[in-house]
Amino acid sequence: MRLIRPSAEVGDEAGRARRSGTGRAAALLVLVALGTLIPLLGPSAALHGTGEAAAPGAGGIGLMRAVLCAALGVSLGELFVHRLARGLPGVPPERPRSWAPFATAAGFVAALALASVVAAGNLIPHRLGQIDVGGLYGSRDGELALLEVNAFLLAAAVSRRPAAQVWPLAAVVVAEALRAHPETEQSPLAGSGLTLVHLTCAALWAGGLLHVLRLLRLWRGDPAGAALLGRYARVAAVLLAAVTATGVCSSLRRMPSATIPDQLTTTAYGRTLLAKAVLGAAVALLALWARIRLRRAADPLTAYAPARAEVIALGAVIAVSGLLTALPLPIRWSQPAVAGYWSLVTSTLRAVRSSMAL
Image (cartoon, rainbow, N blue to C red; front, side):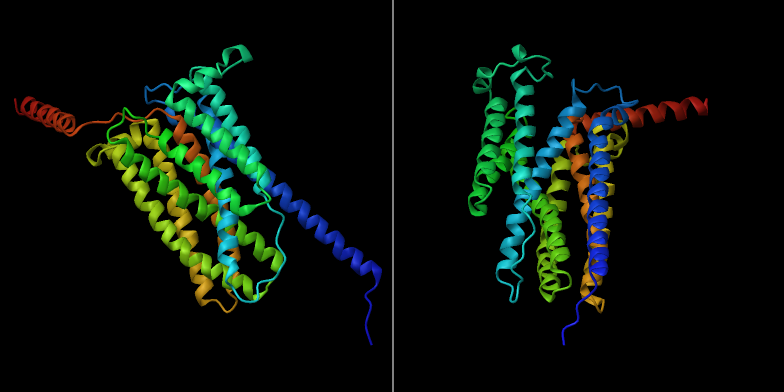
């Protein structure tokens, strides 16, 4: 005999589901609003007392860079996790609604805004007459900005064909890596290579974890969810190692090891880099906590809570990374200059000691 639940009970469950969905949406909006404050308000806090001056509109530029990186992460993360889930046995057919169309549209808007800044001579345009679109074709930065705009536009156009999105998204990553290291920099190709690996691994790590958690919530305790989370965790360990190694190498290129203790506290770039490192350490601890639960807990899906906190912390890292790209680069001291600096310090100490002896 089949039991039929009263309609009132079914209605209560539907109401609770709607309230929980509304609560999650409200929490997501609050987190996004807080995340936007980091690049918008960060320049003034990071530059305070350093004697440095930021470029006009640094907050807006940092926000657009953060949106661009987040769009890459969401889009590449979905493709990455779909590839991971393809070979798992017993995977449910249900899939959450793709966020790739929204992400690529946001990335297109951010890339278009950044291209308008380049077209206005790296200044914030206040009217259309200040934007020289033709001038974009005459500079390296302009061509890279146009490449990002067109790549996101193409990715949005083929968002219903995931396999076709790989190439335009890869073009954005390459353009960002080249943009971050101009030709006037010492060994720019090496820096671009480091940024290429760093940005790709970070996007797969953050965006992949976000999509894994969306699948786990949809599948509601299905064993395939724990298997997918375990498979992602093994790959994420490699991604974390690559992000850490390339981040350290890139930092040493910007700030030689002998100058790091000083520049981490006296320059805006160093302070922001230090904040990013602290957030990165928190993300690594949350990732370790999630992996321990995944391996040792009776229910592997108890790793969901620390993994969700890890996603939130990764969002903060992306916001700080956007801020970092908008701040003035630290002084690149050469080794002779560093030696001269320490020679000046030691000679000053000797002079002070001699005066005290007298």
